[in-house]
Length: 90
Image 1 (tube, rainbow, N blue to C red):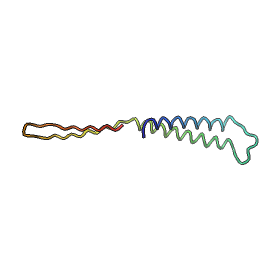
Image 2 (image 1 turned 30 degrees about the vertical axis):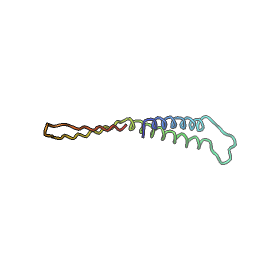
Image 3 (image 1 turned 90 degrees about the horizontal axis):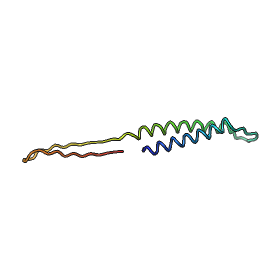
Image 4 (image 1 turned 180 degrees about the vertical axis):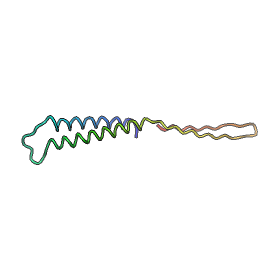
């Protein structure tokens, strides 16, 4: 995954956590039949925290750059020469 994916997940996690915290701690509902706003807020809060943590992991792991270098040394009648191939994986 790319770094942009990690930052998107982190932002989504923060948004869900804020909405969940507002539903859990700031709102009181007087008549909701079969729907508890505090429970829905807790679910969103936990989901936001988990997404934030996953986003940070992807952000850190996606920042590593991988470079593979292959060298092939060949000898010819005129002398030796070196062939180098470099693959960058971002």
